[in-house]
Amino acid sequence: MKFGIATFITDQGIGPAALGRAVEERSFDSLFIAEHTHIPVERRSPYPGGGELPEIYYRTLDPFVALTAAATVTERLLVGTGIALVAQRDPIVTAKEVASLDLVSNGRAIFGIGVGWNREEMENHGTNPATRGRLVNERLRAMRELWMKEQAEFHGEFVDFDPVYAWPKPVQRPHPPIYVGGGEAAFPRIAELGDAWLANSLPPDTLGPLIEQMRKTAGRDVPVTVYGVSGKPEVIEGYAQLDVERLCLYLPTKPEGETLDVLDRLAEVAARFR
Image 1: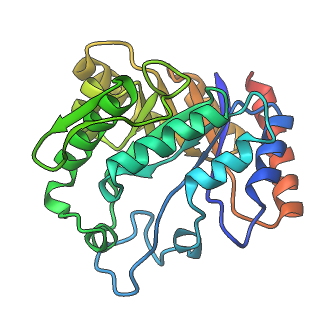
Image 2 (image 1 turned 180 degrees about the horizontal axis):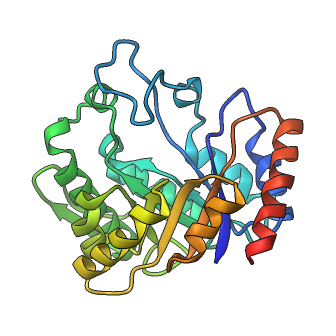
């Protein structure tokens, strides 16, 4: 089982370059970071974690800028979005950002995606929450065309463009792996468009049956990465009994010195299970 790090990179915590270097030095294989463009002050959508929304949600750096900074100071570290909110992103621009990150990192990009939970946030981007699932699927299909075709075109319900040239193309072919976030509603998306399931903090006893259901829906042995896992050994032990490829241990957003101390502790725990 592989171990990565999941975190929010903000203007108040460790910088992305220092973080990327520290994560790789401690033998973690990947760094996944969250995305929110903004958080509306007046919000009806409840925070999925319960209680008040943590400040880190509205202080996140742009994920592709941050991951590029991390990629330029590392050699092996996989750099991934966890998750990119495709329902709030222009597909042509996003396709270029993903491909550029893959080029700059020499083929180490992972495109973790999801539909999002904050309805007011997506409405500010002109997205109708009621159709966000269909919108995400269509944008992913359009992005794959842009990555895979010399002259790409797409004509759909939400995305429509005649033949275009769009470079760079990704280093990884046919494109960087798409890790699909979400629960059961995302399983058909995984089946059609995903290369892995990015399961968000689900406990082992819940995750096990869902892995079987997801793979049955997909009709193949889809890899599973669990995002935002506690660094407690007893928690990790539960996941070790499941058929998962990777655990991304949750790293709180702290200044550099505190972050390095926490990373040291997480690395010690991960070493016990490798």
